Image (cartoon, rainbow, N blue to C red; front, side):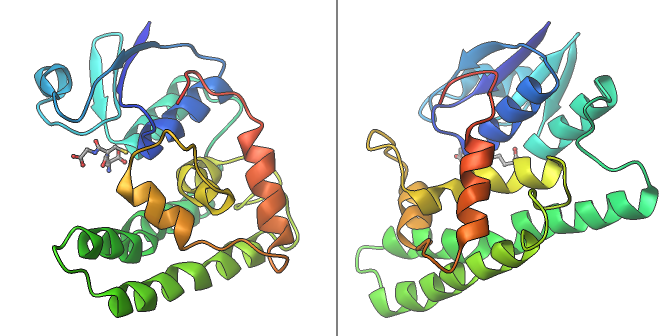
Length: 208
Ligand SMILES: N[C@@H](CCC(=O)N[C@@H](CS)C(=O)NCC(=O)O)C(=O)O
């Protein structure tokens, strides 16, 4: 039995919800609020979600969890078999977490200041918007970001890129507002738009 510690509307938790469903695995959810992380802190020694407990093994960090699930249930694979191909996919995921997220994080931090510099927000926002073209091109001749099949690349990026199509009005998260308002999906992104719909139609092991 897998237990997942998660928070409502968490992008990193959605990565795991998609992966669990892809592997045909269920999970018992322990839903925490960011105001009280004691349950997740107690089990993992840190306060961020997602964390899973699988047969007594505690794993935090969404990408570590994806790798664990792929070893536990190899089919359908989330990572390619070859060492080099896998390294390429890891590079994409590192780029996504370490580079793609930079400007949205900076916009969020700017908006939290008492007097945000809106010109800076606009400049950073233009970088976020411009990156939609990278995903459109990655999808130019295939249905998923890293090939013809769903992979870890799609699960890592989707919960963030989906905001290009808007957000749940009940979602209170400022970061999500940032990636909704600064990812203007348009007629120049037909492949990306279809990919968002394609991935959005997949099952998740738990709700938002
Ligand atoms: N690298 C971690 C990041 C986890 C993370 O930042 N989780 C967010 C939810 S999506 C969180 O717990 N945020 C609470 C906070 O930052 O205080 C992962 O991929 O799981």
